[in-house]
Length: 52
Image (cartoon, one colour):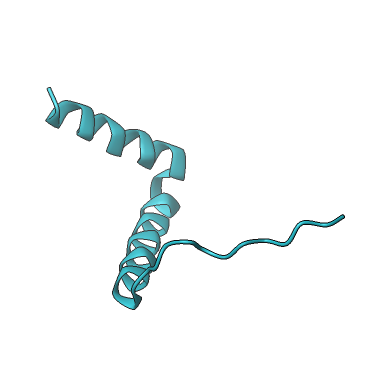
């Protein structure tokens, strides 16, 4: 028996979708310069420093 995929259970507004796309596009532009893993590590490091 095959299982059917269930759609997203949470309502996501159009505005939230646009914000997600803008964030992803920005991240991809930064990743072109320095690599995605390096960029993510930098973001995590900044977050850790701000939470100290």
